[in-house]
Length: 187
Image (tube, rainbow, N blue to C red; front, top):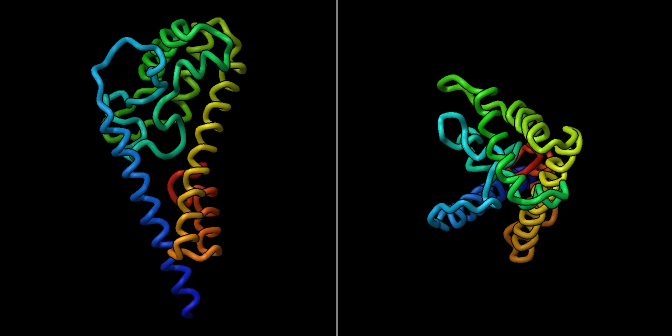
């Protein structure tokens, strides 16, 4: 019974620590305000929902899809195209996808439908095969997920090192993140 309580307490503490760290990192990145300029590398696939709010359903950029948006420069590199061309096409594709996917008041944005619409529109605009664009988007998402997983693992390792968690508790929390049971996973 005591062991069960320790595991539950450890998992709860991990979830709270993880949530706080994600909130702090989100807050830190949100404080970097700059005057908007026409730079092509800051273009996002679905950074905002049709109503102008975050497309992630208010989850602070965590969950499935392009959390902080798809970077035009990274996509251009993956596709072997000019960044300015991809940036313009990405903005056009995002706008077209918003119009085609659309949601009603109170309805959550369907991220899979949004991504599919963006990929299809982007492929048409760029004259690139849709499968090639989807593969590039998938690679970028996998890289983003790997970076998030590494950051979570680093925090868990630090918690084990400082005695906040046992290795077993950290392993359990890492598995929960991997399964999407806690934020940052493949959910």
